[in-house]
Image 1 (tube, rainbow, N blue to C red):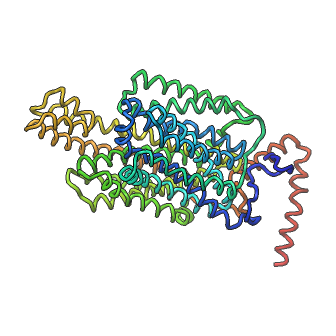
Image 2 (image 1 turned 180 degrees about the vertical axis):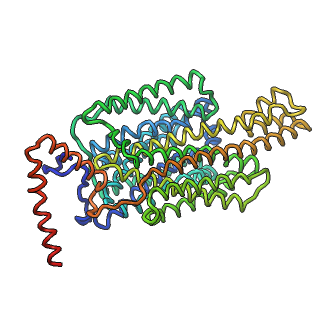
Image 3 (image 1 turned 30 degrees about the vertical axis):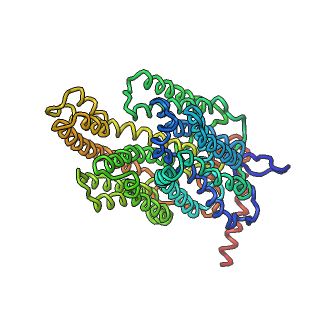
Length: 573
């Protein structure tokens, strides 16, 4: 790779500058760097879910309309997913630490604005700015991790810890939000970010290494805007489908179509450019493309199911939100355990078997949950959630590790952004797909209940919560019949959704069979020793083709000293 100028000297692109207290070989501080990166990820993961339990309090205080409330909840993940590629590749160009620290600052400022928002419009703007900050932080954490852990064995352990922290953040968000709203006010769910960011900014500036990718050629600003707008439109349409809007609805179909066109043009533009924003050649590597596909499939199969399971626990079994969160904790603990032991499992099993086994375990857990009925079975639920959490995290950990290992150090930010974008897209599509399956299986069960008017049955077909409201309004025998039919229809829909989810997971297990069989670790432990060494070899081959007069010299002359050295060592031994 070409060098980049730093402090008047030339250094190899993608190689991090040394930071205070770190030895030349990387030093023990890389584990402190991991701690800082995990705290960053924890904040972003918590903020993605912490508002969910505060929605009633926000509604009571700010009185947002239905559309405004939808944007308050959805604008954060929508903006974040749209800008991941933009900021991931920008970090490769201007410096990953620089983008990360700017993300810290913006995240803190947006948190303060959201906490004291006087009206729904300001809160929507603040949540959008939080999404921008999150998009700056998320790919930077993975790409810096890729830099400071050049050895694949240690990097696998670091990614395991990183993924375990992500699982903790997703689970802690609703619990923390519920505690803060119950004891303070809804703005405190945002205000809690400020002291953490106040510490993270100076600590990150002092400890984190700066690094960049290949700076050859100008940064493709137009390509970055095309990717951001295209992803925004696609994710927006997918979220509308997930919220119940029809795919053929003009407000849904038009953005999706426009977004797809923009993304197709973006891909064509990247293929034509000498220095593309995203190295699409990565997708020619089976390990990279299959890993990205596995991430999408895993989230597609499970995120929508998780929302449906939360409704089942609260509306069918009658658990409180806190009890629901506690019931889901075994899933989180199992995911943490899988992340922490994932490195050793990966070395033992290899990527192919580990991802396939993770998918198979998750499918088994999902099928076991079909034992859920209208009555609580705690042992079945806890056992299923434990296997589900362990299998899911095993799959995601292995897929992320394999994907990141295929990227060179120079394109780590872009590769991390692709992985995070696939995560967000998989989650959005999963909510839309499994939500549609659930609705299709649920509606017939409440559409023609004896003694219930057709209009009431149609209204009850929107959701189980709506059915309960209609039954309370009807009262008497008709209301009770509708409530019983709705519960039964919801459980039936849950079983159908579980079966579809298991089928998707088994499809992922089959796709994983194309991953590498063993975890190949470089002997020299150089950064990017796998993918980067392959790219260096490609460039060397091209140079030899361009300069054939040096070909024989390169083979016989340059390699001869190395062969003589190896022969001398062998003779001495």
